[in-house]
Image (tube, rainbow, N blue to C red; front, side, top):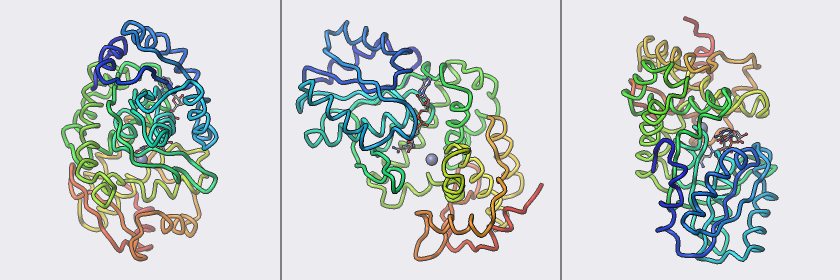
Length: 345
Ligand SMILES: NC(=O)c1ccc[n+]([C@@H]2O[C@H](COP(=O)([O-])OP(=O)(O)OC[C@H]3O[C@@H](n4cnc5c(N)ncnc54)[C@H](O)[C@@H]3O)[C@@H](O)[C@H]2O)c1
Ligand SMILES: [Zn+2]
């Protein structure tokens, strides 16, 4: 369910879905301050017994330790198999508390209330939940579908500018891989979106999440069809690894990766330079970087090779064919990537 200013009606929509007595809402302290009272009041109106647990924010808190804290709180409150976990937050809370819901008593009801652009049109959809461990991100997890995703785009009003732009990368990606109308909407409505006008956000989030839902429902268990969602991620993941996740956010790395993928497609004669230019201007419109940071090429290439999209030693890239259509291309060479990097205007 998607809407604007629908937080106060959450309890009304939640009540018919519940069979148990209790709800545990997992969030961050900041979101508890911003939205905790409104969510609580809405549950109280329906006489739903609930508790709030706030976990510190940040990717470095998406850990087994905090996952265990959620389980511990749920058990100590006496939640049983018929009870419910609600996640109120971005991808970190959604993934981690979602994993707790997936595993507590082998699975209790899960409801997401995503509050970032990333969560609203990406991480709350598709059923992947999990936590990071010291060996890598998202290495421990499960597939677990929520009963409801309750998306209030008005929560995006309080998102920082950098998080807002970071989230825009995959909105733009969703346009390029399968929705040219969304792409056009982003071009024509930049100021409405950046000023966070409710109707513009609603239109944009609805279109972007439909792309993700369509792709994942054709490939529930990630057996191949979801690969198109990795557009921009081959170089993006390599950049994140190279920067050790410090100075580049995921969306920023993906934006640079999309620029590189479009250039590669141009070099392979798949698209005209126009597409490269158009995509670049939309990324820049939404405050995203497109220029490759200065890294030693040999190291970059090594990290590209480590990415999951390597199929029998062949480097695979998702490349655009036209706006709204991408293809998976195997056997991209080191020389081609180097050329793409050096390609100017
Ligand atoms: N499960 C999936 O399929 C999937 C897909 C994409 C990303 N992810 C995961 O999602 C995570 C990233 O998610 P994210 O980008 O939402 O980051 P996040 O959850 O860390 O949220 C970003 C920041 O924004 C703050 N915040 C959230 N909502 C806010 C609001 N409405 N107002 C003000 N501040 C708010 C948070 O406290 C946090 O500091 C990563 O761990 C990634 O692995 C999962
Ligand atoms: Zn991504």
